[in-house]
Length: 266
Ligand SMILES: NC(=O)c1ccc[n+]([C@@H]2O[C@H](COP(=O)([O-])OP(=O)(O)OC[C@H]3O[C@@H](n4cnc5c(N)ncnc54)[C@H](O)[C@@H]3O)[C@@H](O)[C@H]2O)c1
Image (cartoon, helix red, strand yellow):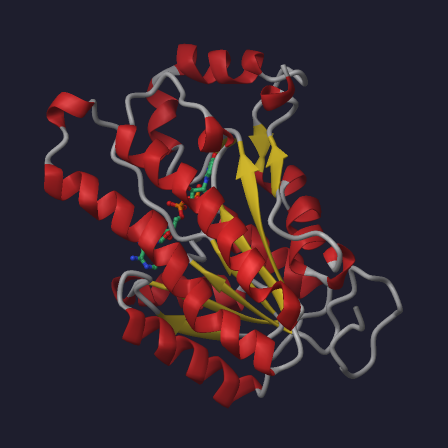
């Protein structure tokens, strides 16, 4: 596989100089912001996107990135016209797109008996249908540009469940794995790789913040890993993300990479 033509670059497969990356669900202090930071630090021009009510937060995330030329956008992954508009905005503004990271996600923290059908469907819509829509809108555009990388966020519970009652979340993230494999299969001949990152508990992001009220459970999560600690948003996420979102993973597709301190290997 030849890499997409671009300007500059150090020759490192992790070098994103001259490339454009999109991060959807780029939450302040979350994995999306860390993904954007890692891509920008590797030289990419980054387009960060999140829900419209978070306009100020998106702008702050953009402004926090190293380098220049980054852009901030609004998007709702459950709305295909919104995702299409994001893709067109990024292409219009930056002229190309090479990598897409979908970090959008929601969690309920409710048992099955307390979860309404509407709530279950909402989780599936954002986490699973949204993931598919992002792939469906960006996949052909990456293909038309000669190839690229799509990275979806699933979880260490992608193929198992955890102690927090979360049937909708677990179901949605299991679905993300096979959406990832399916799109990888359909887009592979177009030089588009599609992979998933499966984090265990990274603390503290907006999603994991409620755990601060449950130190016993936090400790349980930490001790459940081989490394005996939780994931550190600042230290443990950028490397695996950059691997899958850069040409370094040009012959890796349809895979799930666990960032879990060994959790899933036990
Ligand atoms: N933090 C962890 O420990 C952890 C562990 C496993 C998996 N994950 C996954 O990683 C991803 C990022 O998690 P995080 O911890 O940074 O959480 P987070 O809550 O900080 O970020 C999720 C972002 O998704 C955005 N979002 C929600 N609905 C959206 C929609 N319809 N359209 C666009 N954006 C939308 C939210 O605004 C939020 O900014 C999620 O998919 C999550 O399931 C996180």
